[in-house]
Length: 217
Image (cartoon, one colour):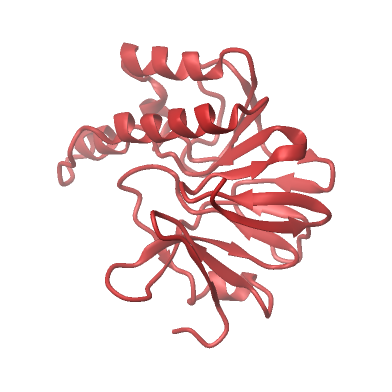
């Protein structure tokens, strides 16, 4: 399996090129910031129209990762939907998502875009602690053993900025898993303030690589 192996609070984790996080010992696949329904929400608000395929792209990527890892647990780290109205999925998307949920535990962690339960199967939680790790949407300063999302970290090497994991000895911040999600430069506050000295950025995509955060601008 291609990816970046690292340990966090004793847990052996695997950052995957797709932007998902795999915890083999728990059979847990974590993804963050799917932002399903983003194009429809922007259209409802009268904004710039986006291609209406982001739900298909995101679910197809999630489907492929679930097929690859066969997780017992899928944990969605918040902002799974672009707002609560976007959780009212079209019938084919709801069926697709329900099929992915079948036979496994599915956890919805609330985010700032979807701060309440949605009308879908699964467990709806503010945050989740499993073993030595705590899963929440937004990183908390001073936390340890923390897995979070929210910021959609990206970093520029050459050409367009690329989504990345941010990893140090206390936390990992996941990139956005969803299509059309944008991102925040990883070397700028608040991300640079959250990450400890020695933190790395692990860039996702077809040519993943690790870079030190220190000294990058």
